[in-house]
Image 1 (cartoon, rainbow, N blue to C red):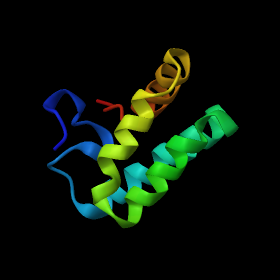
Image 2: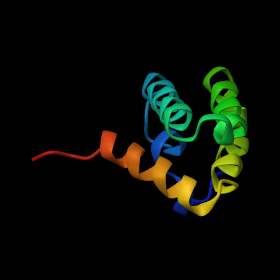
Image 3: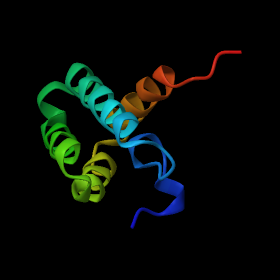
Image 4: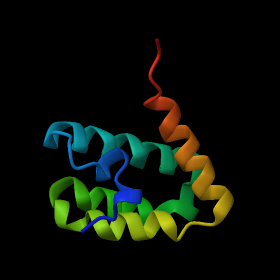
Length: 86
């Protein structure tokens, strides 16, 4: 189970499977572009979670395992994609 504080992006409980897949792919693209080889473990975990949601906790663990600056870069870029414009 994903803790409430970690229920964002592809880990949200209230999104469709299609939206989860889109968010996983978007996040994986960000990881590849921003981190390159440093993000390999996370990118692989996100790829596995695309076909099996049972891998979502492992992907979250990989995200949390990034160096602080790398994690912040990935999360800031992801948040920028999903920012509401009014």
